[in-house]
Image 1: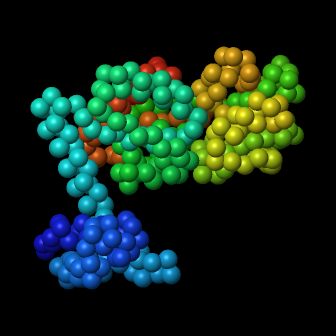
Image 2: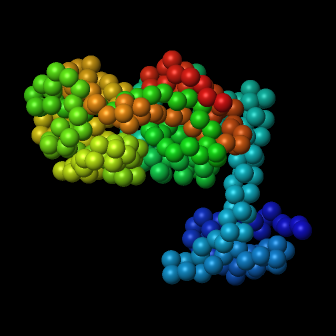
Image 3: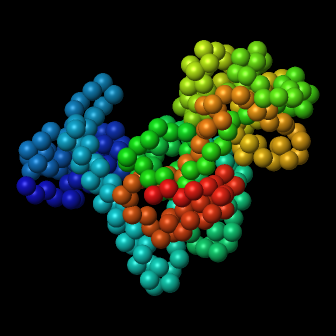
Length: 306
């Protein structure tokens, strides 16, 4: 069985953009030409690649295999081209990082010296929830992911892991700030809370803790913005739940306090530095990965995992 890689590109663009017409516009050719190339590809493979649904075209299982193949091809091409540039002494390229909002300050601090050393390498930073971070890495839309809490996945390579317990975070005049001992989850539940939505690792860990303690948290504010949670905590009207590194600067300036929570799930929460297992990173991405592993406070002194 043989197939034409150029035809795979037509199929890939149609799948990525949600339809033949959108792919045709993107590639500046007639929609009939895209359809013809995809039909020819299906004939070569002896398999149906698309199914029509209300929301447009959806790839079949065979289609998804072909999409994974093409993504790997693109990734390999990027790595080879970047390596060739580096052989010529041209340190150029682009590295994409996807992460949650809680690590932004530390991430910027880590990237700053990297950008000074490699001024012609651009870095893209996308802020997402845990589920979207994992998806972006697995689909090769991002080179590097920084994720707080995720289930083990053989398709992910974890380069660094660090235990980062979750704390109740509140303003100094908040009632929780007067606690002289670690609080229990049921005590936290009595207060107004600003928490992330369920796509974020912090909320997923809290869900596990709630089940373990048979206690339910009822947040007054649910958001996908880390900054919203911090700003609400700063007003003193509500508390939130975060690892210490996420609010390091506010803790250092004593604008906020971190109150330990006596709950096993929360005390064993972890942050991970991840890539797609088997993807060969470009030299630029590999160098930034080394920088983040060594210089980000969340990963300092943590063990390197295979």
